[in-house]
Image 1 (cartoon, rainbow, N blue to C red):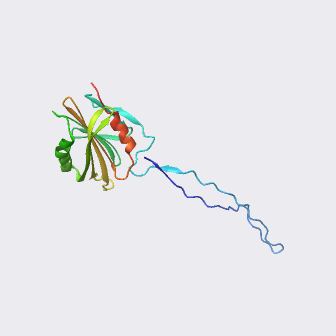
Image 2: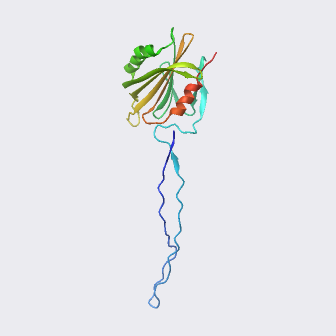
Image 3: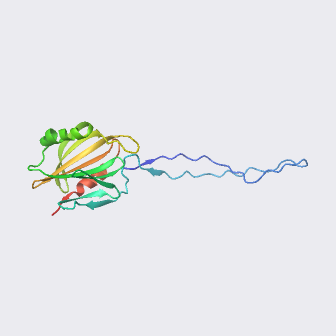
Amino acid sequence: MRRTLSSALASGLVVVTGAVACSSSSGSSGSSPSGSSTTAAPPKEVNPAGDIPDDQVFVAWSPSGGGHMVKIPEGWSRQQAGKATVFSDKFNSVRIDRESVNTAPTVASVRSVDLPAVQQRAKNVRAGKVSTVQRNGGKAVLALYQADSATDPVTGKSVRQEVERYAFWKNGTQVVITLSGAVGADNVDPWRIVTDSFRWTP
């Protein structure tokens, strides 16, 4: 989230507004204006690279065919990546995949099947913890890992990302929500809002 950066204290500034007169008959006269104290500007809140702002608004989104709902940060760009829907802003993204799967995911199946598939399509994947977690919409298998982002088409840069992959399952349908952000960004609260908002719908 955003962090407050300490601002520099402005030094005292003396401004001379009157010209000093000089003549052969009189010496220069004039006095320095009294020093005026300056007040330090209030600290500015700066959004570090990758952090989602504290005042970010979230809006509900469902696919055209229904089936589930999830809240997405308002204003993020949206695109289709095959069957997946991806919402993104800079190097942050929320990817939503839906598919028919006969059996519910488990910690073991995510480790042995899903993560190897991720390694095939992502760059420099380093797998982390896999566990079962409870969200408001039900249980999910959470896989944590790091990977390199896709190269930015404008800057040509790629950043190291931390990824949270949540696999929800119900009655033969699996929805995977993958949240990505730059390493070091503090997006714990926004990601919790997104994953806690997930609901199965008619």
